[in-house]
Amino acid sequence: MSKENNLLFIPLGGCSEIGMNMYVYGYQDGNNIDYILVDAGVTFPNPEYNPGVDLIMPDTSFVEDNLSKFKAIFITHAHEDHIGSLTHLFEYIEAPIYCGKFTSLIAKSKIDRGGGNSNLVKIAPHYPKFIKVGSFKVGFVNISHSIPEASGLIIETPCSRVFHSGDFKIDYSPVLGKPFNKKILSEIGKKGINTLVCDSTNVFNDHQGRSESNLFDNFVNLFKKVKGIVVATTFASNLARLKTLASAANRTGRSLVVLGRAMNNMINYGKESGILKDFPDILSPRDAKLVPKNHLLVLASGSQGEPRAASAQLARESYMGFTIGKDDVFLFSSKTIPGNEIRVSYIIDQLERRGVEVVEDKNGLYHVSGHANKPDLNIFHNLISPDLIIPMHGEYRHLKEHERIAKQSGIQTLLVENGDVAQISDSSNAAVIDKIDSGRIFLDGSVLIDEQEGVISERKKLMYNGLLNVSILVNEIKPYFNFEMDLIGISTTVDFKKEILIHLENELNYSFGNNKTKKLQNIESYYLESEVRRILNKFLKSEIGKKPHISICIHRMDII
Image 1: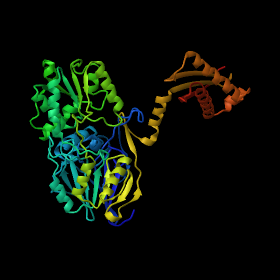
Image 2 (image 1 turned 135 degrees about the vertical axis):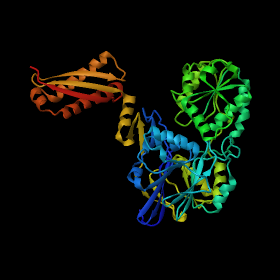
Image 3 (image 1 turned 30 degrees about the vertical axis):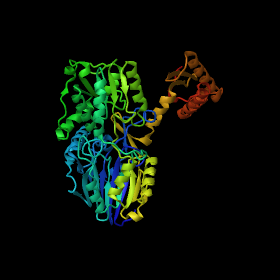
Image 4 (image 1 turned 60 degrees about the vertical axis):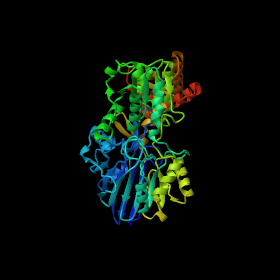
């Protein structure tokens, strides 16, 4: 890297996928460099590709190697893909963590669970006030999204000015929080923005974005028609949606009960922070059972098909004494995140079997996105009027499409992927100048493992091909082999198991010839293991079309 004065942009996550947001900004002044971190998110595993994994987060080796140079962490909002890794990765960072009041409650809870120092969490003032850390001045700008207190960041250094959009949408009448403010954003743009690092999630949607407030009447009309219980599920963090649903229930004479820890926690955080006001009273599950079914709305967690969440348990049988069936309606007021389709489809199927009417948001009546569509991105580009746009928060195809529409407006772009080190001091000469090691860390139970360790690839092989345990007893006095074999997850029969053992014994006898005493006394265990593995792999591939994971244990004994 050059030792000149530089502003560096280094995404550790979020510039090759939707989610797992983690971005490093570095200001280099000769031999000295200061870093700040923007967001610390996770993504959720696809069971087909990451079996048994609980969460996926960016590899933070770069952060760990430069701890003393990190002056602060800035969290744009409290969605898991921006804040989720605080629990697991940052107990060793002693830099302050700046965020909004609502976000701070969630951040402190996560850090406490991870054993870190939650006193590092600081409530950030809003623009036009700035936070000075090292060579950086950072301002929090209110911006609309699907969670309270979402913020874009103005990042100022001696050589450049950046606007980091975070996740945003254009909503002039949100149910919670401040509306999208064109005036403030335009003023920020007029003062000069060298680089806009911008959300790309909905870049393929050509329709104008819609406001959260558009949904209220649709909920009221639906609730009036239902003869039984209405169960509604959405993202637990979408407090505006929860308030809209609760207000519609109140308008139609339905009492409210909330099922699911995550959703109850979010509502409590909203009330504690002062954001969630005038929220209708919530009945306890015990009291709610006394209410007639046609006078009840149940808000249930688990919109993404999480198997232990309230929605999944209601679909299977019951949850906290609640059961649903004929005349009841189950409403999905959410979008299914790619990768969760099978789980959500399973819940819908179970509900249909119970006679529940399932209402999905196929026509946009019951859900609006929290991200800017293509027309909204163009409006945002014009307001900020940057010299350079770096697309973020997207897969490669999203970043390329965002780059295309920016170029159509005559704005210079730079495509940056995870691990790239981009120099963005001079927008006209911005370029990727280096590469750092980047990757993913898996939370596997309570253990963090590197994706390169091979644990997950071994687990996938077990999942698809099964396990064959082989125990071999070698008697070196009276030379013979004795085998025990256990097949797990392999389609077979008792006769086939015997056939495997006979084949193995015959092949080994052939391999070691007649002078077995000498051979067995001298053969190394690793060679015997290699021969057994070769024989079994070839035979099983031929007979059943699979190569199971083979575990071999060799016991040597001298028995007369």
